[in-house]
Figure 1 (cartoon, rainbow, N blue to C red):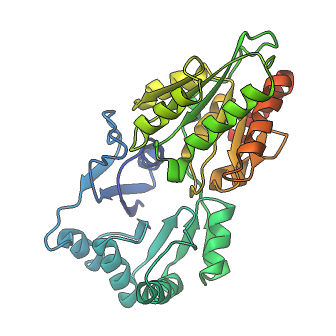
Figure 2 (figure 1 turned 30 degrees about the vertical axis):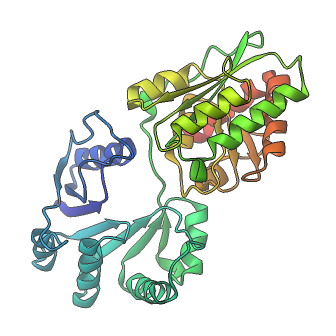
Length: 347
């Protein structure tokens, strides 16, 4: 017998699309996906992410997809999975499911416990989520940081399940061309170019410090892949620090282009100041890149073991990040081993 599974999420990404295709291919699931928005200007993918499974966009009237609400109330599904909890339709669906005793599950990356919210909103949100947690069949968090946050928020421990983001390992070839005599050491970051979040400016300052501290560091290149509000600011910073021969800010790239860049790199850098569970880290490890990442990135904390498959620095600490970058330049043979370990972690 098929289990009728209704999955509600914000939008399609390369990561949840892989999950949905995998679930759709399983004979025991009858999967239908409903997305809040078909196009996300922050991630303007042209790649078709909706093939291989059944998906539709919400059709809203007065901020609510009433057809979706009706499907849930009429018990046309055996389980509703809700990814996120911050839209009117999702709030209504989860609330009605709780009241009517209908089966539903929640899936979230790391909730931001320190977000700046007005007092009344914070109180109402906290109490509402506590109530929803009590009625959900299961609450899935993407990794250990999410699990700890959910526990802090009052979610019953027995309901919490670790359910991370996924990447299709078949799309990522293992790094096999590492050699100690590589002429140019290539570092790469992938993500939205928004310095207040992703902190690519911190990374560029760290590279400048590394270069200034050691004139004989060797040849290197840093590629920042992504678009966002700070692209021009980042390029101006590169010029101001005299790194135009070393740093490239590419702008937006499609998933297949990103995989090509990752395949040509040697080290992945993820310096975020706050990042719930960046899937870009998982992509890099799937290729076999060691990750130099911050302790404010959920997937870095969850997957990176310091000095084994990468290095972890304190978010925003230019000096510490510069030290890690310099170490990787000087100890490249160990970076090779870290890359192999990163791939093992991904597998």
